[in-house]
Length: 337
Image (tube, rainbow, N blue to C red; front, side):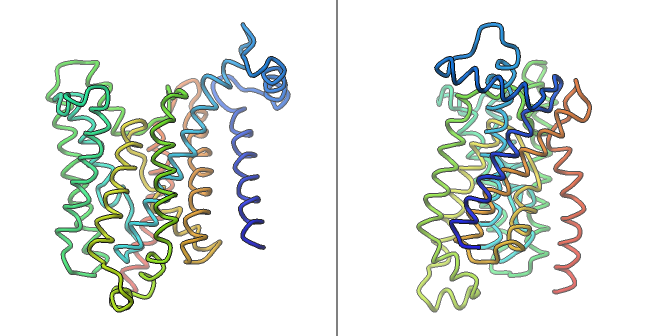
């Protein structure tokens, strides 16, 4: 199958999954309900019909939520691939290396301690980005020149535990119930309450990641030759790692500021994608983004449907599925080393 054909296939599957997921929730919608609502929306010059419950559910609740899921899955997949490439570690990803926990701690510090308040409405974004960058810098700094994948994972787990503990401490130190509820949101991950305006910054982060990755495809492929081979071919490893850290932390910070911590997507999807398209980053990044988006849309649909009308945090679902796969990958890595 040619490259364009693969793109068309994944795009078709993505749209199909999105439409399928629209029918699930506390208020089930049949395919006829969805098609009728979409048809009337089109015939009414893309304006919702007053009093139409199906249209309200679709356009005000489920569509923006599923779009956020697709963007979030794409961002997590991008960053997971980048982290695994620059660290030469199949276990690297935003959650395992503590990036998400750092971003969560930064966001909670902005909410409860009012840090970064001079940034106004963007204080949570700045806090999340700062926390994500700090966590990544600590992990890579503590890793030093070691190439041991288990060491890197253990360092990441230590950083993750530290920032998770810091987040919990800040939550328990607050006597404001509204602040506590808002802060707890970041620790579990949720796509509830997403509106179209919430998609702007994650979309910009997704596009920025895609654009930068498009310019560094060659450098990413050079790293497949190993660090020594990449250096001999002229790649400045240190500067390249800093670039990846900055754009990854920025993107994860923006995502966590809106949906909280969603683990394991950035770990699992790169491995699944490599099974489909191989290790070349031109295909890996593109199809990883598609697969990550599809996976998170399905996962979120399960999270909001399985205990309807109550909603399960999406991080619970990704953890239940991702943890066994993580253990399996870790076991293989230890056997190899």
